[in-house]
Amino acid sequence: MSRMRFWHPVLCTRDLPRERPVAVRVAGRDLAVFRARDGKLGALEDRCVHRRLKLSIGKVVDNKLRCAYHGWSFTTEGAGESPGTPKLHACAASYDCAEAYGAIWVRERGGRQPLPELHRGFEQWTFAGCVINAIKAPLELLLDNFAEIEHTVAVHPQFGLEPDRASETVVKLETTAKSFTARCHGPSKPPPLVTKLLAWTWAGDHFHSDFTFHFDPPRSAVTHYWTQPRTGRERMAKYFLYHYFVPKDERESMVVTFGYLRSRWPGFDWVARRMGWFVRAKIKETIDEDAWLLENMADYDTGIEGMKLSRFDKVLGITRERLRKVYDGKLQA
Image (cartoon, rainbow, N blue to C red; front, side, top):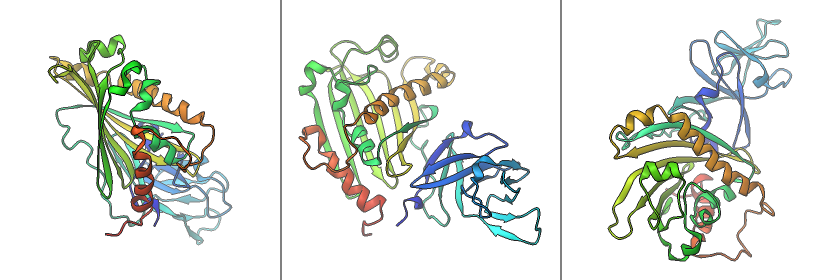
């Protein structure tokens, strides 16, 4: 089955201009995404059916995408016409395209999956917006990185496990045929001043990372927070992230993140709503740290044979099995 039967977020709404298309690559397909003058979104195969120029270097004229080569124009549904031969009509391959939660989403025509309801259950949280990070690594290695907490020992100065006490970390894993959930906590590394003041977390606290992975399409729901280890009481703030892991092709991927904040500080919501840009910058900075790691892999073999794996790495085999069965469409109903 095609991976494009699922909705994939591919572009932040703020990055789509009014009068020109944007090229995106998802699951090995090159698309030109554009917004017509009437506001309707379109996603077409990024190749003119006339002489195969990229439609993404064209421009939007009224409600159509006009090719830069000979001026052929196409509607959001892909219906095309030639200005030089008015009776000649053509059809470009088109995709379903929608806008939600500050992102542009695409899937193949006729897909049955509804758009996700990301805000459901988060009415009391502050939505910080959407962030996209490019990753120069295959989807499997990207998932490996986000599916374990051990790498926070050496990476991510904003959060993670205290290196000298990482052996005390507790990891609990729950699996289903289509997903898995990991609940992890251990001694926290000293947080930076901003995190310390926002969450009111101190030396000796425990850092928690609870995450659930689904594969239709690949995505995770992650909650990070701190607790006082003696009482188990949560500190003043926590944050939640939806990560969508989008394969561009067999070699490159991207992470599309939707961020939420919650705090017990009085007046925090008012402040957080005006600091979305700051939160998005921190999310991008943090995921760029993961991107740097993945860009420096010794090789990009997605197999796990021959690796010396630790107790944190049980999910590596699970992600590959779920990708094959769920994302690639081989799981029997």
